[in-house]
Length: 267
Image (tube, rainbow, N blue to C red; front, side, top):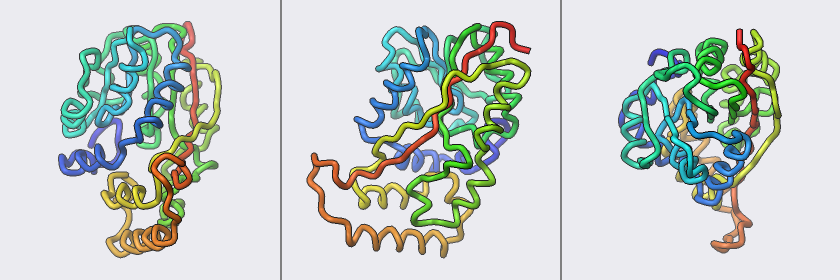
């Protein structure tokens, strides 16, 4: 795949469908994330999501920001087909495009979201230049990611070999900020962390990971993937049964959130 992703996995319609099933969030967690993101974007009538995937956040933001039009851009036709199928909305428009060549006019957006995508960008400074082009002065960007020095996702407990792999893929915080602030295009407004449940318990997490929907799983051999799944099965077997409403068994995943503001006169 050319452009926004280095990976080719999500060009496959079967994997795009798996991504939709394997990356869904519990309703309360999705609403919490949408509320947090919207609170950082300021007044926005047109919000862009770069790397929209199957549209989970596009639809959630449309509900959270009722006055806004949402434009979801992704380079994968199968992913956009899943987005239209599962997360269509009257104020959400999905468009084919890449982060370094966005199919939008200059100054046509008020805010932008990049969720779990910056580690896929082959040229982050080029993506930053494009964002500066399509955003109005003062427009906000929210980047939802995990920086290299804080890789702590639950997946590493069961597939520890993925930690070294992701340490090569994910930028350090300083690298990420430099890529977006270079040339005076953006100023950093805030960097913080936010965590929400991604599964009600380990059994649900096991079913999610079994879909192999995350691109990182593509680097594992069948034997390595099976070994990690066996470790997770062992953890599931000893997990205490938790009631459906007590939250005792919830699995949290933390993300770093970077908020940027587009300069009045980007270079």
